[in-house]
Image 1 (tube, rainbow, N blue to C red):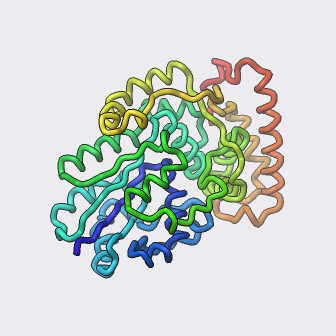
Image 2: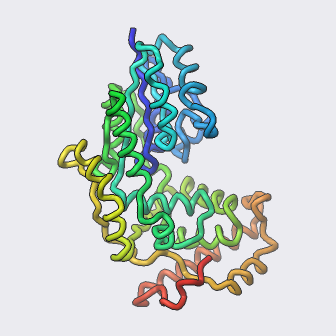
Image 3: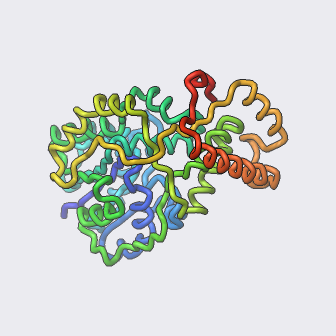
Length: 358
Protein backbone atom coordinates (compact mmCIF):
# COMPACT_ATOMS: atom_id res chain seq x y z
CA UNK A 1 0.00 0.00 0.00
CA UNK A 2 1.31 3.43 -0.92
CA UNK A 3 1.96 5.76 1.98
CA UNK A 4 1.41 9.50 1.55
CA UNK A 5 4.02 11.77 3.14
CA UNK A 6 3.29 15.48 3.36
CA UNK A 7 6.18 17.90 3.92
CA UNK A 8 5.00 21.32 5.07
CA UNK A 9 8.13 23.39 4.37
CA UNK A 10 7.00 26.96 5.14
CA UNK A 11 8.11 29.44 4.13
CA UNK A 12 8.51 31.32 7.46
CA UNK A 13 5.80 33.71 8.70
CA UNK A 14 2.95 32.10 6.77
CA UNK A 15 0.84 30.75 9.63
CA UNK A 16 3.16 27.81 10.32
CA UNK A 17 3.02 28.07 14.12
CA UNK A 18 -0.79 28.15 14.11
CA UNK A 19 -0.94 25.14 11.75
CA UNK A 20 1.53 23.21 13.91
CA UNK A 21 -0.44 24.10 17.02
CA UNK A 22 -3.62 22.68 15.50
CA UNK A 23 -1.88 19.45 14.48
CA UNK A 24 -0.20 19.03 17.87
CA UNK A 25 -3.49 19.45 19.74
CA UNK A 26 -5.19 17.04 17.32
CA UNK A 27 -2.45 14.40 17.53
CA UNK A 28 -4.52 11.58 19.02
CA UNK A 29 -7.63 12.28 16.90
CA UNK A 30 -5.47 12.24 13.76
CA UNK A 31 -3.88 8.88 14.71
CA UNK A 32 -7.32 7.34 15.12
CA UNK A 33 -8.03 8.24 11.49
CA UNK A 34 -4.72 6.93 10.14
CA UNK A 35 -2.88 10.29 10.01
CA UNK A 36 0.42 10.41 11.88
CA UNK A 37 1.84 13.78 12.92
CA UNK A 38 4.95 12.36 14.64
CA UNK A 39 5.59 13.48 18.18
CA UNK A 40 8.26 16.12 18.79
CA UNK A 41 9.66 17.84 21.88
CA UNK A 42 8.01 21.10 20.78
CA UNK A 43 4.48 19.65 21.18
CA UNK A 44 4.03 21.15 24.64
CA UNK A 45 4.78 24.68 23.39
CA UNK A 46 2.73 24.16 20.23
CA UNK A 47 -0.30 22.85 22.13
CA UNK A 48 -0.18 25.99 24.29
CA UNK A 49 -0.24 28.16 21.16
CA UNK A 50 3.36 29.25 21.69
CA UNK A 51 6.18 29.59 19.18
CA UNK A 52 7.39 26.20 17.95
CA UNK A 53 9.44 24.74 15.10
CA UNK A 54 7.08 21.98 14.08
CA UNK A 55 7.73 18.26 14.49
CA UNK A 56 11.05 17.84 12.73
CA UNK A 57 14.52 19.08 13.64
CA UNK A 58 16.71 20.11 10.73
CA UNK A 59 20.12 19.85 12.38
CA UNK A 60 23.49 21.14 11.07
CA UNK A 61 24.39 21.57 7.40
CA UNK A 62 26.10 18.15 7.17
CA UNK A 63 23.00 16.48 8.62
CA UNK A 64 20.47 15.42 5.96
CA UNK A 65 17.17 15.80 7.78
CA UNK A 66 15.34 13.53 5.32
CA UNK A 67 17.56 10.47 5.69
CA UNK A 68 18.38 10.85 9.39
CA UNK A 69 15.02 12.04 10.75
CA UNK A 70 12.15 11.42 8.34
CA UNK A 71 13.03 8.01 6.87
CA UNK A 72 13.47 6.19 10.23
CA UNK A 73 10.00 7.37 11.27
CA UNK A 74 8.49 6.15 8.00
CA UNK A 75 10.21 2.77 8.24
CA UNK A 76 8.70 2.21 11.69
CA UNK A 77 5.17 3.41 10.94
CA UNK A 78 3.93 1.53 7.87
CA UNK A 79 0.42 1.13 9.30
CA UNK A 80 -0.44 4.84 8.87
CA UNK A 81 -1.73 5.78 5.43
CA UNK A 82 -0.55 9.40 5.81
CA UNK A 83 2.39 10.93 7.67
CA UNK A 84 2.80 14.70 8.11
CA UNK A 85 6.00 16.63 8.82
CA UNK A 86 6.19 20.39 9.34
CA UNK A 87 9.00 22.87 9.82
CA UNK A 88 8.90 26.32 8.22
CA UNK A 89 12.69 26.31 7.84
CA UNK A 90 12.79 23.23 5.61
CA UNK A 91 12.69 25.57 2.62
CA UNK A 92 16.19 26.74 3.56
CA UNK A 93 17.44 23.15 3.30
CA UNK A 94 15.15 21.76 0.62
CA UNK A 95 18.17 20.36 -1.26
CA UNK A 96 18.34 17.60 1.38
CA UNK A 97 15.02 16.41 -0.01
CA UNK A 98 15.43 17.09 -3.73
CA UNK A 99 18.85 15.43 -3.87
CA UNK A 100 17.52 12.23 -2.26
CA UNK A 101 13.89 11.77 -3.28
CA UNK A 102 14.57 9.86 -6.53
CA UNK A 103 16.40 7.11 -4.67
CA UNK A 104 13.53 6.42 -2.27
CA UNK A 105 11.11 3.45 -2.53
CA UNK A 106 8.12 4.00 -4.82
CA UNK A 107 5.59 3.16 -2.10
CA UNK A 108 6.39 6.48 -0.42
CA UNK A 109 4.55 9.26 -2.22
CA UNK A 110 5.80 12.68 -1.20
CA UNK A 111 3.71 15.82 -1.48
CA UNK A 112 5.15 19.23 -0.56
CA UNK A 113 3.02 21.98 1.00
CA UNK A 114 4.49 25.41 0.28
CA UNK A 115 2.98 28.65 1.57
CA UNK A 116 4.18 32.02 0.25
CA UNK A 117 3.45 35.60 1.22
CA UNK A 118 3.49 39.05 -0.35
CA UNK A 119 7.17 40.13 -0.28
CA UNK A 120 6.53 43.48 1.41
CA UNK A 121 4.57 41.77 4.20
CA UNK A 122 7.26 39.12 4.44
CA UNK A 123 10.08 41.65 4.77
CA UNK A 124 8.26 43.37 7.61
CA UNK A 125 7.71 40.03 9.38
CA UNK A 126 11.33 38.95 8.91
CA UNK A 127 12.49 42.24 10.43
CA UNK A 128 10.18 41.70 13.40
CA UNK A 129 11.47 38.15 13.84
CA UNK A 130 15.10 39.30 13.80
CA UNK A 131 14.31 41.81 16.53
CA UNK A 132 12.28 39.31 18.57
CA UNK A 133 14.53 36.27 18.33
CA UNK A 134 17.99 37.26 17.11
CA UNK A 135 19.00 40.39 18.99
CA UNK A 136 18.69 42.74 16.00
CA UNK A 137 18.83 46.40 17.03
CA UNK A 138 18.83 48.43 13.82
CA UNK A 139 16.01 50.30 12.11
CA UNK A 140 13.74 48.94 9.39
CA UNK A 141 15.27 51.02 6.60
CA UNK A 142 18.76 49.82 7.54
CA UNK A 143 17.49 46.23 7.54
CA UNK A 144 16.13 46.68 4.02
CA UNK A 145 19.42 48.11 2.83
CA UNK A 146 21.43 45.29 4.40
CA UNK A 147 19.25 42.75 2.60
CA UNK A 148 19.56 44.68 -0.67
CA UNK A 149 15.73 45.02 -0.73
CA UNK A 150 15.47 41.34 -1.66
CA UNK A 151 12.91 39.02 -0.09
CA UNK A 152 14.91 35.81 0.30
CA UNK A 153 11.84 33.75 1.16
CA UNK A 154 10.20 34.65 -2.16
CA UNK A 155 13.38 33.82 -4.08
CA UNK A 156 13.77 30.48 -2.29
CA UNK A 157 10.13 29.61 -2.89
CA UNK A 158 10.55 30.22 -6.63
CA UNK A 159 13.71 28.08 -6.70
CA UNK A 160 11.98 25.28 -4.77
CA UNK A 161 9.03 25.28 -7.18
CA UNK A 162 11.39 25.04 -10.15
CA UNK A 163 13.15 22.06 -8.52
CA UNK A 164 9.87 20.29 -7.75
CA UNK A 165 8.69 20.66 -11.32
CA UNK A 166 12.00 19.46 -12.76
CA UNK A 167 11.85 16.34 -10.55
CA UNK A 168 8.09 15.87 -11.01
CA UNK A 169 7.48 16.16 -7.26
CA UNK A 170 3.88 16.87 -6.28
CA UNK A 171 3.36 20.16 -4.49
CA UNK A 172 0.54 22.47 -3.43
CA UNK A 173 1.01 26.24 -3.34
CA UNK A 174 -0.79 28.63 -0.97
CA UNK A 175 -0.68 32.42 -0.67
CA UNK A 176 -0.91 33.27 3.01
CA UNK A 177 -1.51 36.97 2.24
CA UNK A 178 -4.72 36.03 0.42
CA UNK A 179 -5.81 33.25 2.80
CA UNK A 180 -4.71 34.59 6.22
CA UNK A 181 -6.34 32.48 8.97
CA UNK A 182 -8.05 30.22 6.41
CA UNK A 183 -4.62 28.93 5.36
CA UNK A 184 -5.08 26.18 7.98
CA UNK A 185 -8.29 25.02 6.27
CA UNK A 186 -6.52 25.02 2.91
CA UNK A 187 -3.60 22.98 4.27
CA UNK A 188 -5.71 20.30 5.97
CA UNK A 189 -7.92 20.05 2.87
CA UNK A 190 -4.84 19.44 0.71
CA UNK A 191 -3.77 16.66 3.07
CA UNK A 192 -7.25 15.14 3.05
CA UNK A 193 -8.02 15.61 6.74
CA UNK A 194 -11.63 15.95 7.86
CA UNK A 195 -11.86 19.47 9.32
CA UNK A 196 -14.10 18.17 12.12
CA UNK A 197 -11.24 16.27 13.78
CA UNK A 198 -8.88 19.28 13.91
CA UNK A 199 -8.75 21.30 17.11
CA UNK A 200 -9.17 24.85 15.79
CA UNK A 201 -9.61 26.55 19.18
CA UNK A 202 -7.27 29.45 18.48
CA UNK A 203 -8.66 32.44 20.39
CA UNK A 204 -5.59 34.58 19.61
CA UNK A 205 -2.80 34.70 17.03
CA UNK A 206 0.21 32.43 17.46
CA UNK A 207 3.61 34.15 17.33
CA UNK A 208 2.12 37.60 16.72
CA UNK A 209 4.23 40.58 15.67
CA UNK A 210 5.09 43.36 18.10
CA UNK A 211 3.33 46.67 18.65
CA UNK A 212 5.15 49.93 18.00
CA UNK A 213 6.01 50.44 21.68
CA UNK A 214 7.11 46.82 22.10
CA UNK A 215 9.29 46.95 19.02
CA UNK A 216 11.06 50.10 20.13
CA UNK A 217 11.56 48.57 23.58
CA UNK A 218 13.04 45.45 22.00
CA UNK A 219 15.50 47.49 19.93
CA UNK A 220 16.72 49.16 23.10
CA UNK A 221 16.90 45.96 25.17
CA UNK A 222 18.74 44.11 22.37
CA UNK A 223 21.32 46.90 22.14
CA UNK A 224 21.87 47.02 25.91
CA UNK A 225 21.44 43.42 27.06
CA UNK A 226 21.93 41.31 23.95
CA UNK A 227 20.10 38.50 22.22
CA UNK A 228 19.28 36.15 25.12
CA UNK A 229 17.57 38.76 27.29
CA UNK A 230 15.81 40.25 24.28
CA UNK A 231 14.49 36.86 23.17
CA UNK A 232 13.17 36.11 26.65
CA UNK A 233 11.36 39.45 26.79
CA UNK A 234 9.93 39.06 23.28
CA UNK A 235 8.70 35.50 23.92
CA UNK A 236 7.02 36.67 27.12
CA UNK A 237 5.27 39.55 25.35
CA UNK A 238 4.12 37.40 22.43
CA UNK A 239 3.04 34.33 24.40
CA UNK A 240 1.47 36.02 27.44
CA UNK A 241 -0.12 38.99 25.65
CA UNK A 242 -1.35 37.49 22.36
CA UNK A 243 -4.11 40.06 21.75
CA UNK A 244 -1.91 43.17 21.45
CA UNK A 245 -2.31 44.81 18.03
CA UNK A 246 0.97 44.74 16.05
CA UNK A 247 2.39 47.73 14.20
CA UNK A 248 2.10 47.91 10.41
CA UNK A 249 5.56 48.85 9.16
CA UNK A 250 5.97 50.94 6.04
CA UNK A 251 9.07 51.75 4.04
CA UNK A 252 10.25 54.92 2.36
CA UNK A 253 9.06 55.44 -1.27
CA UNK A 254 12.58 54.93 -2.64
CA UNK A 255 12.94 51.67 -0.73
CA UNK A 256 9.60 50.43 -2.04
CA UNK A 257 10.71 50.97 -5.64
CA UNK A 258 13.87 48.97 -4.96
CA UNK A 259 11.85 46.16 -3.36
CA UNK A 260 9.57 46.02 -6.40
CA UNK A 261 12.54 45.88 -8.76
CA UNK A 262 14.48 43.24 -6.81
CA UNK A 263 11.55 40.85 -6.36
CA UNK A 264 9.46 41.26 -9.51
CA UNK A 265 10.95 38.29 -11.40
CA UNK A 266 10.31 35.79 -8.59
CA UNK A 267 6.83 37.18 -7.92
CA UNK A 268 5.87 36.80 -11.59
CA UNK A 269 7.23 33.23 -11.65
CA UNK A 270 5.16 32.23 -8.61
CA UNK A 271 2.04 34.07 -9.80
CA UNK A 272 2.00 31.94 -12.95
CA UNK A 273 1.15 29.05 -10.65
CA UNK A 274 -1.42 30.84 -8.45
CA UNK A 275 -5.08 31.52 -9.19
CA UNK A 276 -6.01 35.04 -10.24
CA UNK A 277 -7.63 35.82 -6.89
CA UNK A 278 -4.57 34.55 -4.97
CA UNK A 279 -1.76 36.42 -6.72
CA UNK A 280 1.26 37.73 -4.82
CA UNK A 281 1.28 41.53 -4.67
CA UNK A 282 4.04 44.09 -4.43
CA UNK A 283 1.86 46.71 -2.81
CA UNK A 284 2.09 48.12 0.68
CA UNK A 285 -0.66 48.41 3.26
CA UNK A 286 -1.02 51.80 5.00
CA UNK A 287 0.93 51.87 8.24
CA UNK A 288 3.69 53.40 10.29
CA UNK A 289 5.93 55.59 8.11
CA UNK A 290 9.08 55.61 10.23
CA UNK A 291 11.51 52.80 10.87
CA UNK A 292 10.92 52.58 14.65
CA UNK A 293 14.47 53.44 15.58
CA UNK A 294 15.29 56.50 17.61
CA UNK A 295 18.96 57.15 17.14
CA UNK A 296 21.31 57.03 20.14
CA UNK A 297 24.84 58.29 19.86
CA UNK A 298 27.74 56.32 21.36
CA UNK A 299 27.75 58.44 24.51
CA UNK A 300 24.04 57.85 25.11
CA UNK A 301 24.41 54.13 24.57
CA UNK A 302 27.42 53.89 26.88
CA UNK A 303 25.64 55.85 29.61
CA UNK A 304 22.65 53.52 29.32
CA UNK A 305 24.93 50.51 29.73
CA UNK A 306 26.52 52.03 32.82
CA UNK A 307 23.14 52.72 34.43
CA UNK A 308 21.92 49.19 33.69
CA UNK A 309 25.07 47.29 34.70
CA UNK A 310 23.46 46.10 37.91
CA UNK A 311 20.79 44.30 35.92
CA UNK A 312 21.15 40.65 34.83
CA UNK A 313 23.14 39.96 31.67
CA UNK A 314 22.65 37.20 29.09
CA UNK A 315 24.15 34.63 31.47
CA UNK A 316 21.47 35.19 34.11
CA UNK A 317 17.74 34.71 34.30
CA UNK A 318 16.10 38.16 34.04
CA UNK A 319 12.72 36.83 35.14
CA UNK A 320 14.18 36.32 38.59
CA UNK A 321 14.99 40.00 38.92
CA UNK A 322 12.25 42.33 40.09
CA UNK A 323 14.57 45.22 39.26
CA UNK A 324 14.77 44.10 35.63
CA UNK A 325 10.99 43.84 35.42
CA UNK A 326 10.52 47.29 36.93
CA UNK A 327 13.06 48.70 34.48
CA UNK A 328 11.25 47.07 31.55
CA UNK A 329 7.99 48.66 32.68
CA UNK A 330 9.68 52.06 32.89
CA UNK A 331 11.11 51.61 29.41
CA UNK A 332 7.67 50.74 28.06
CA UNK A 333 6.29 53.93 29.61
CA UNK A 334 9.09 55.98 28.06
CA UNK A 335 8.50 54.42 24.65
CA UNK A 336 4.77 55.16 24.90
CA UNK A 337 5.53 58.80 25.59
CA UNK A 338 7.94 58.87 22.65
CA UNK A 339 5.27 57.46 20.38
CA UNK A 340 2.77 60.05 21.58
CA UNK A 341 5.31 62.81 20.95
CA UNK A 342 6.03 61.42 17.51
CA UNK A 343 2.37 61.70 16.51
CA UNK A 344 2.65 65.47 16.88
CA UNK A 345 6.09 65.69 15.23
CA UNK A 346 6.30 65.83 11.40
CA UNK A 347 9.56 63.87 11.13
CA UNK A 348 11.05 61.27 13.40
CA UNK A 349 14.60 61.28 12.02
CA UNK A 350 16.74 64.23 11.11
CA UNK A 351 19.17 63.68 8.20
CA UNK A 352 22.22 64.54 10.28
CA UNK A 353 21.32 61.83 12.80
CA UNK A 354 21.28 58.94 10.34
CA UNK A 355 24.78 57.73 11.24
CA UNK A 356 24.09 57.54 14.97
CA UNK A 357 22.79 53.99 15.04
CA UNK A 358 22.76 51.29 17.72
